[in-house]
Length: 180
Ligand SMILES: [Zn+2]
Image 1 (cartoon, protein in one colour):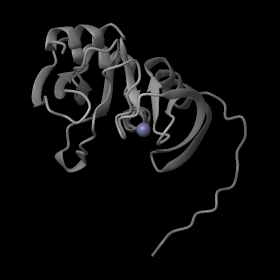
Image 2 (cartoon, rainbow, N blue to C red; image 1 turned 135 degrees about the vertical axis):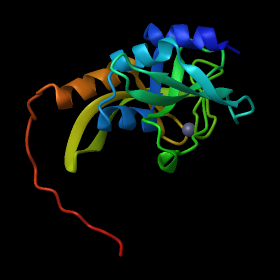
Image 3 (cartoon, rainbow, N blue to C red; image 1 turned 30 degrees about the horizontal axis):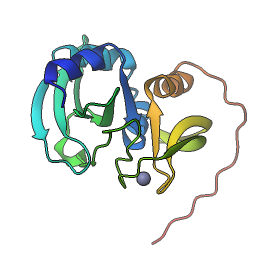
Image 4 (tube, rainbow, N blue to C red; image 1 turned 90 degrees about the vertical axis):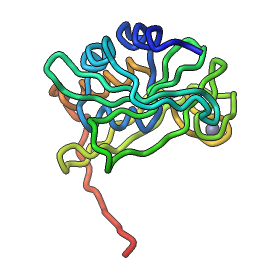
């Protein structure tokens, strides 16, 4: 199991990846990798989850250079990368506890399966009330439950594409259904 200092060092030097939940949060809340580097440098441990189902994890609090508070729950297990399980600006009402992953190269944080495949997925994000579809996103997909894990690089590329003036390849009408 890693120490807090090791996890901070990995987070602030880009050695991390995202669960699908954290990937969606980082994009929808426009949290950049630079803000994660900054916030993790002196991040403090808020809550410890040493007995989490598949891997020990903890909730950290840090601040970007501009003063943005970030909570991030991350794995402390001895695999290569720190996995960001969820990330958000502190708001207790939005807290969702996610199980963590990673004792071997791949360990699904949802079902515990250890085999994954490289695949491409699509995600619909809600950005200030506007729906944005991003296709062909590379992901590690669990062979059993299909939960996806996203790299740091991919997450930053998607975020930059949406906020950095990327040009949509097409615009499509959207039918919306609801269960009432
Ligand atoms: Zn799985």
